[in-house]
Length: 351
Image (tube, rainbow, N blue to C red):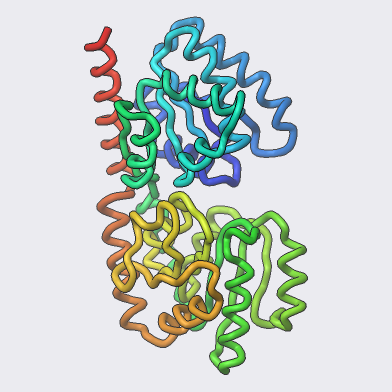
């Protein structure tokens, strides 16, 4: 199995780490090869990973399972697909972004040929949502495509320290980039302040930190919004249990782990309904939905949750039940085994 370093900060790294902790690698006899290390020097880590992978294929590895995102992540994974195809190994591609089909359609020339050639020789795709399955089915008719939810460790995220929620406290977790909607969130908090609604916010993340801090300062909201760096798992759990709500105002998303973590901790969610979130969240049932790129609407949705404890409690409890039923590690592990059995049995029958 090829994917990013499980200790890394990205979404696929988080999935790999949970699989590792959940016994996926040991129970299914998976040799996991990190295509890139969590820190700098990606090329330096890619070369030994490729050599290790090629050797594993040569000495008898029959199934190759590759996790991929788009753009640079996909181009790196193509390096691993080539020997898998040449050595006629069973190739499974696990596609994580909701916009992967759009990425493929945007390619031209040699990149388009390479992507179509390699992907068409896979034995199956695994995707995160039914919508992604539909998109990929249109591009690769007849390809077996299976839906596998991202996992969450419900038991590992219990509130064992009995942390109490602070009133009027908003939490954001993720990358500080415009497509994550962080600037609309700052603007929404500014709108609430002008309306004399008491609110505080903690942002935890990485990428473009100083740019966002400068924007907060320019808006005169430094006393309302704190822009923090990335935090570890223990501190993240405390942040989730101590906030009033998690807000994720992204312009585009796959299936973000932070949403599953909020569901697992009974944290009320305010989010946009983009990408893979369309298959997870429902307005007024397990989340409150805001319009993308609309600070005024986002502020209104945040205000709804701040002022309606019954609403906040209802959506949080519904989300928690769904997390237990659909996304808990043991549930996903059973589904993973069913998918592997299906792919392997289908291939054996064909042979």
